[in-house]
Length: 204
Image (cartoon, rainbow, N blue to C red):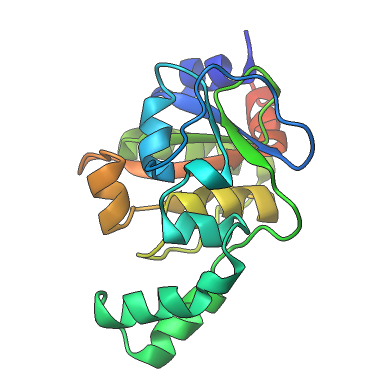
């Protein structure tokens, strides 16, 4: 049983594995060429593996946090100021604080065969509670998370879990709820592989 299947059996929900590729990309049947958002791709990957590349991603926030749009910072600040209602100063700080991948990233595999770097799911609160309990039992400490209403699934879950090496949680953002089809009874959670393995070793 692989890690994704073990996590589904242990905590419930549908989990996917994320693999961040800095070098050679694997052969994957479906590689979206244009027009897909990261949160949308998460839902699509539940039925078949996907490989996201810079050319196939249509989301300014995701492209920025994946390091695929270095010049998009000011555009994002403008958007959160004009559309989100934040002051320009707050919008700038929110964008500057976003988790971000630096260095070359060629693609992101969703449910591909290679061992994942991060496990991601949209869970019900009761399922999150079980995972939280197991975390406290295994690590002997409270789970501390940062919460934000912008760039939620791509930035504050996937990238944060990958870069920081810790569990990341988000209630979503308007785009993720719309395009990722996250229902109102679900929250997004990302678990780095090493943390996931330690949770499973707890055996409770």
